[in-house]
Every structure is written in structure tokens, then in C-alpha cells.
Image 1 (cartoon, rainbow, N blue to C red):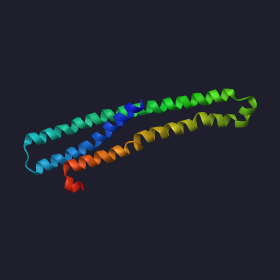
Image 2: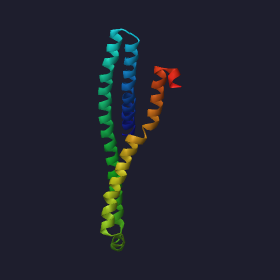
Image 3: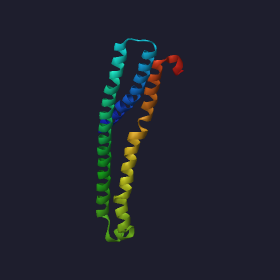
Image 4: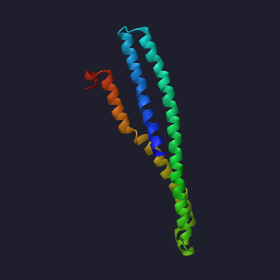
Length: 144
């Protein structure tokens, strides 16, 4: 599931950076008096890329939420199994409120952290590489 999520996130990143690159190409073609056909093809590529990016973003969000929910379920199961091993004295030492907090609030915070890391932090290196690639593909002198 993680591989599918990362693949969808990477396609989302590439597509999100492709649309402004196509807009720059369209402006360059328009100012260079290129053919109407070339401008139309570039203009039609933009909504197609947006549609693919939108679908991949939705798919990545879904896969990421399923992955985080599975991790949270495993953590809750492990906490529950461990709580069954506790004696009455051990359970009283931790307290009911603490056990509820550990099984609910802490696990939810970890689940949100997993989602945030996958959706916001892991794509950063790909954004860097793709942005540089697109910048150099448009104009290498200006990119330097």
C-alpha cells in the first residue's frame, strides 16, 4: 500500500508542476509566433494533466488514509492485548483515563502524523528534482 501511495503522490507532484510548465510553454509559443496548432495542443494538455493530477491526488489521499488507519488499528490491537496482560494492580496503577488516552488520543495523533509525513514531507525531494528538470527543459541558461 505504501508503494502505491508513493507512486500516486509522485504522479501528483509531477502533474502539479507540469501544468505551470505547460503554461510557460504556451506563453513562449504565443510570443514566438508559433503555429496555432502547437498552441492548441499545449492548451489541451493542461486540462488533461489537471484531470490526471486530480485523480492521483484523490487516490493518494485515500491510500494514505487507509495505510494510516491500518497502522492505527495495529497499534490499538497491540495496546489492547498488552492491557489484557496487566493484572488488576497494574491496571489500577495506570488508571482507566490513561488507558483510554493511550488507545484513543495518542494513536490518533500518530495516525495524523503518519498522514502528514506521507502527504507533505516525503514528496519534497521529488518536488525539488522535478522542478529542476522542468526548469532546465524550458531554458537551461535561465535555470542556472
